[in-house]
Image (cartoon, rainbow, N blue to C red; front, side, top):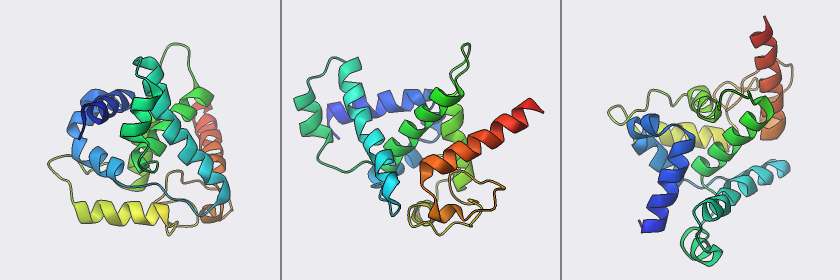
Length: 179
C-alpha cells in the first residue's frame, strides 16, 4: 500500500477506536479490500458517503484533492468506508454533547453482522466473506438479523434501504435508552 493509503486507513481507524482497530486490523483490512455494492437504489448514498470520507481526510490533513483522487479514487467505496461513514451519520443523529459514540455505532454494526469475534487471533477469512456476502446480497433474515440493523418492526428489511433501517434501529435504541 502507498503512504497515503496507510495514512488514510490510520485516520479511519481513529473513528473506530485505534485500540480496537489494532485488535481487529485484519478484519478491517478485509472490509477495506471489499467493495460495497447495493441493490436498493437509495443505498448508493451510503457509497457516496463512504467515498466522501476520502475528501474529508484530504481537507483535515491538508492533502491536495488530486493526490487523493490518484491514490484512493481508483476504486469503489469499500465496506469499511461505508460502515465508518454510516457510524458518523449515526453519531450525528444520536449525538451527546459530552461523548462521541462513533466507534460504538461501528462496533455495534460489526456485532450485528456477526463479526465481533473476528479478532486478529480468531479471524476466519471464509466466514468473514460469507457474512459480508450475506449483508451485501441481502440474504440476512427479514427482521434484519445478520444485517446491520435488526429490529422488531413488521417489515422485510431486506427490501428497505440502509438509511431507513438505521433510523428505525436508532428509534428502537432511543426507546430502550429511555426505559
